[in-house]
Image (tube, rainbow, N blue to C red; front, side):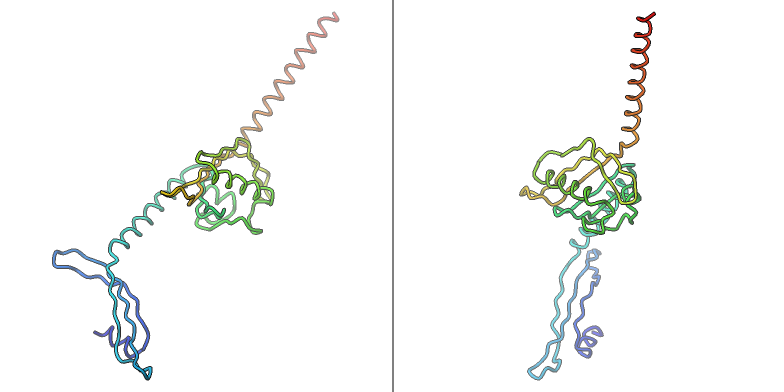
Length: 212
């Protein structure tokens, strides 16, 4: 074929995906590798070809990509921080809300390095939570988790992490969800302060009444 002659003339290998239609009408994908075969003098004397039916593998990879896109769409619809980390602590997926707050693209990768927008104390606290999740079969939850991104006010988060394990129980990922409860805590503190002032007012009124 023309492809064979190209490999022989150029002396370079080819690696392509080709489609083949069978008699039953089914279409299969083949990975075809053609490598030049050389004689004792180094001259191209022919070629060696290998064909592998990769139809099922390509279908599985496509379904995996579609599944990940669907999962990302669900993540992006939530007004929370949602992320997936490797067991080593590298974030491999974040949702749109977290990406926006971090100032990165949603498909970007955030790693716990000196380039992480979070300050050092936050990075260390995050890694400690990751390790707790990896050591536990149950979700690890922190009700008042202080998280500081450089140049931004400190957030108070309610954060949950859970290790994902394979069939052998080996951790393959860490899934995390964090809810920003900063305003809620401020409102609670303001309400508590108001109640204290009201109590002091009642106490002062009682004392004044006793002196009358």
